[in-house]
Image (cartoon, rainbow, N blue to C red; front, side):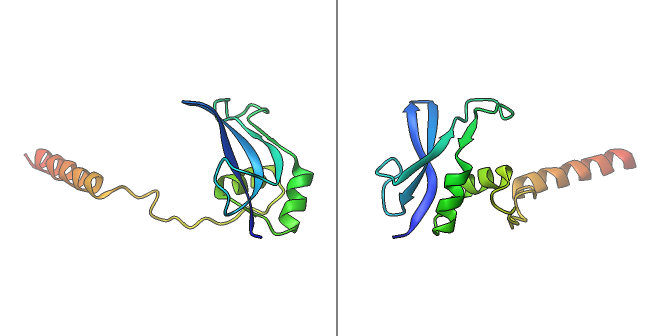
Amino acid sequence: MATKIRLARGGSKKRPHYSIVVADSRMPRDGRFLAKLGTYNPLLAKDDENRVKLDLDLAKAWLEKGAQPTDRIARFLEAAGVKPKAERANPKKAQPGKKAVERAKERAEKAEAAAAE
């Protein structure tokens, strides 16, 4: 059975609250799970200690059993020092889009024209 450490959503509309759970990868997002490892409340401030509550010993045990964390959970585990920091390859994220490049080019042309006059 392929297990994943992932988020299960709770809370009402526009007031999310997540449980960090270990579940079979074939189960639905909010469906049956094997173990609850902690909670995540995105509405709290980023520096609040209650934003992410995670049982690190239990998480380590599940990782040793072969459970695969999702991207968000992997970031939580990296911040807690349980998992080594992974290199993320997304070189295009910091580059501007096509329209932004075109607008910048137009501004540069207008500035050159204004400077030439």
